[in-house]
Length: 452
Image (cartoon, rainbow, N blue to C red; front, side, top):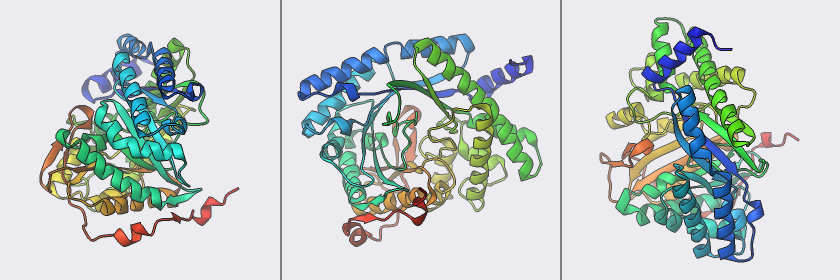
């Protein structure tokens, strides 16, 4: 039971500190939609998504009204679409993307994820078709999100896929150039992609998941930053305890919403993702949490250590509040979606190399970073390879969501609106890794992958 003080504290978190449920995401299996006919395949996918998620938005709104907890996004993830593309050409795959987009619009959901391929060890025909179709698919859709997993601790890094994704990102930036290269904001390259991630752009409904499932992603950077400020001049061990207690409270709210949605929809409750997901709103920033610990600005010396402590304390507090924790769970550091990160990047304190170091100790990776539009595909592939290597070597999820903003240079900014925010164009090292990338093949899995 919640005490009166617990209830009042939660109300204050919502009203004053930007606490919200970032997303309720319904995972939907598409395995039973297989068909020899491309047209029939699209029809079956549309019918399955519409039938399964028919009440998702209404249920989210009812929970918001009942508990007064804002639920910012209602989303759907589906089985990796590449698994259904074996008999399609790229035009057929794009038709599937348009079908998913149509369903998303009619359901009123924010995004639909799962236009995805898993190629960490090699690529089959369905994956080849889907990857080739990504630029056009993201050009002709609004709410479809795409992801490609190119590495894992067990398999190593598929460098042929890394090289390919550098070119795909460049093509996507060009084909959506009239909208600030927004297609790249809906495309992420992964290592160790989780099957139950509720956050976009990387959400997909994994192979071992049930027919349908409800996964919830919580938020609350503003709540954590406020708690640290209230703690005053205490040592870092005490700060860690403050973060743990705060993460516990945030997670309890997330679990309440997840169980309520599960019961109302008659769908199993999957996981609560503990990730602190920032927004461009002032006060709702992971960077501000780090600065509240005593850093002059995010990106200065000490940032990686502060982020490591934050990430660890969030997980320790969260797992005490829920036994069903999964997804990514930690702290996101997307540049365009975090007001403090935007400010640090604009001032020059925060650079891509520092962000890469930070990704070794937090959730995901180089996220929502705009780079000059003339950045070469090989440099993009090199950045992907470096970030994927961090994930593979450290047995963690890492990812890259880069936007080579067409026609933009360092000092410009590109705006995507809404939660995607505004990204300052950051400088990158231009010395070429082209010869290394062209070698192709597979970087072998690290020795610690042999744990059987």
